[in-house]
Length: 407
Image 1: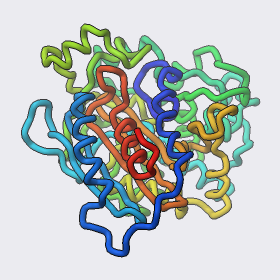
Image 2 (image 1 turned 30 degrees about the vertical axis):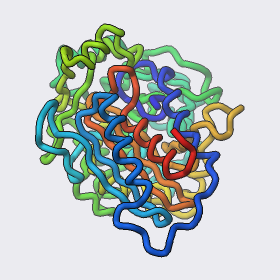
Image 3 (image 1 turned 180 degrees about the vertical axis):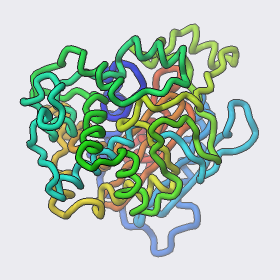
Image 4 (image 1 turned 120 degrees about the vertical axis):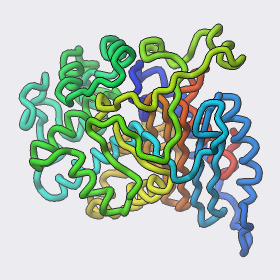
């Protein structure tokens, strides 16, 4: 799911396979109409609870929250696990977590609002606002949003990974990480392909600041979080503080170890499963390096409210909202049901939304506008020792059960 979600430093191309697993829902037949009176615990939830608990155990997930909204099959919220490794205090629905690349949809929404307001245009060359971007006259704002600029991804930098391991409290300025990305060779000429690059979103964040005269966090707060009543959500530009209450976030392996692949060595996987290798507590690692691309904080309730508006409309003009949904294109043109990406928006089968991963936290937030079904999952482990994205795996299982596609 990394090409759509992962901000943790590693090769983005290595993680598309997880996103493809969620695409199975695209082929699902519509479920039969529910009975007139839905049970207090929906039938699908009774089947899923033990399965998700086993899945979390298999992936060594410390804690997880699941929230489902379905007018057809019934609503369901559940928690799994504890706030700390080998602890006893259970996670709670109201816990705050880092949402990683779901933040990209916040930044992208602000950009599209500015387009709605006539402040900039999607076809504006990036060089209009950032003359320092290589080949910026041929890269558009739209290509930054859709990940088709060809610019390098700063989070794949081995140097950045080393610094994150040795100086986890370091505060990064946006220009510091942007300069890393701009110094990388391009992946392809602008518009010639798809490459998930956090440099794109960092540039968009700086352009927002340039055009509004305000910090990006101020614009996100005013235009999205306050507007939707997302009191549990925030965008800390430089702070490493995760508001209470919250779980601890854990990761197996250092950033250097996982920059190329999430999968630990067979020996370390065995040690993790045997209990002799404990995960690293990365809760207080400063996320400023992720900034516009991944520094957001939220809760399950807020994410549910947000993704329903993100997909269903309410933050953009009707025309821009329609254009945003229509912008999503399959990452594999030969497979129309494959995961897709558009204007800072991903699609997994019938679900639109985004996924996110920061060291210690993994998130899935998706909404199916046709069936008005919402699935939100977060875990306080990312990734699992065998390389899986826990929240994405759990979301795939939930969607498979609800849509009858299997797992």
